[in-house]
Length: 102
Image 1 (tube, rainbow, N blue to C red):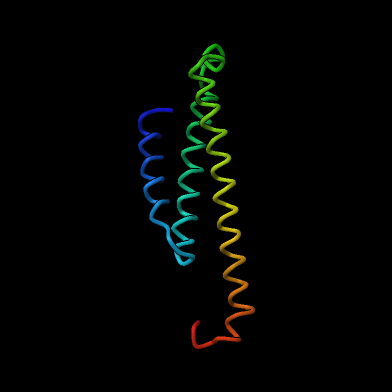
Image 2 (cartoon, one colour):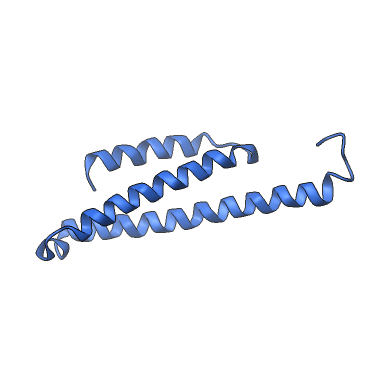
């Protein structure tokens, strides 16, 4: 992974650490998009490596970074899904009972 993508990941991590509530779901979805872009760039970097480098330490590091980003994207998508469910739950079941709060 190059210096630029590492800097992007540090910025992304800082943004993610600021998300504190369900209302910031859009920010989380933006972060997922950014992470997907970084992952795509890393995969493109790996695929454009000569074959002998793909089997080297550098190639293995790129593959590991791609795998880690895949797992992070999957986990973040689960969080977004749960936030959507919770908001739907609140709107369908709790809002009619306590309309003055919502």
